[in-house]
Length: 63
Image (cartoon, rainbow, N blue to C red; front, side, top):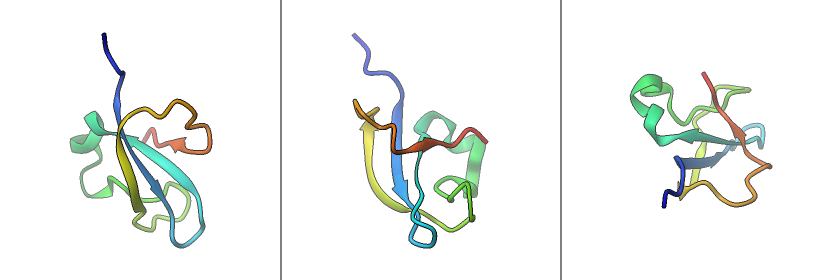
């Protein structure tokens, strides 16, 4: 049984956006991992782990 991808969940202290990054893509994003996709501000970490059942409020950052 698999839980799917491990996700990191953030919110932006500047614009309020909620977003997530897939942990497996950490090396791909490098220093940009955790940045808000809208304004570029470093997000405030909320939690990480298996994808939340209802994470529709969080936009997954694709790159």
